[in-house]
Every structure is written in C-alpha cells, then in structure tokens.
Amino acid sequence: MLQLIIGGAGSGKSALAESLVSRFPTPRVYLATMRPSDGECMARIARHRALRAGKGFETLERCTDLAGAAPLLPPHAHVLLECMSNLMANELFDPDGGGAQAVLAGVDALEARADTLTIVTNEVFSGGADYAGDTLCYLKALASINRTLAARADLVVEMVCGVPNVLKGVLP
Image (cartoon, rainbow, N blue to C red):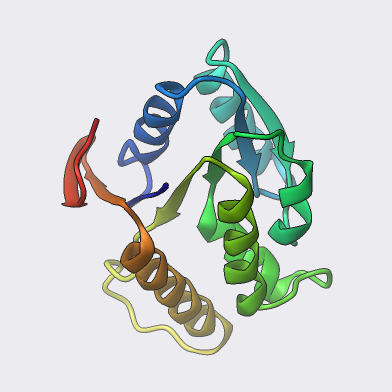
C-alpha cells in the first residue's frame, strides 16, 4: 500500500503520517532523508525525533539512493519516508545524487520490499513567486514526482492548517 501526505510547512503532514503508520504493527521504519547540514536542520531533525519517540519506529537515514535502502528494511516493514522534498533536492544537487530518475527507482524498490510505504512531501507551487534556473528545475521535478506518486497511491491526503483533506482513498 502506498500513502502520500502532502502539505505546506507546518501543516501537520508529519504528525498525520506518523499517526497513520503507528496504526500498523512493528516493524515500523522512519526513513529520514534530510542531510544534517546546519543548526536549523539539526533542530528540525531533533523535533521530528521527539515527535515519534515511543511510537516504535526504527530510524534509517538515507539522503540519496533509496533503492540501496530497500534491502536494509526488515521483512513486512511499514515505512514512513520523510520527506520527498529533501530527497529530491539531494538527488538533484548533491554530488552523490542520482537525479530525478533515482527518486522513482528508489520508491519502486521500497514499495516492492515494504508492506506499506507512507511518503511525506511538500506542496511547492503556492508561493506566488516566479522562479528560474535550479530552483525551477527542482520545483518541476518535485511536482512531477508528486503527481506520479499521487496517481499510484491508495491514499492521498493534503494537510491544510492541521486539517486532513482526503483527495483519494479513505482515512482509516
């Protein structure tokens, strides 16, 4: 099963995703994609660790190459990938990145291995600004993967101000 949770910053998407995955039995794997590059990133990582404390998640950190993470998953795992937005930036701009095609290949590998895959991603085109260059390339790549995942997903939920708006499927 594939679940996609999308929303803006501070929308409650991470809390909803953790709640959904916490309904499943262990093993639960939190697949973290943020590269801890500065104090702000470290603070966000600490906040997310605190949010999922005591919920039975094993953390696997993977900034690029999701396909390489799939064999590391325990059998029958319920995986929460947090977040697609960081992963896309890493795959596009890190020296170790494999580009946008590596993202979808990684999702395919995770889906083949996990019992459920819940992906958190950002809604990126509501900023109201014109972008160019690398920023526009990133936004288009993330929008494309979001559309692809939404088409494949069993459940798609957009979080707005902490309120889930179910776009596809049914919330348990």
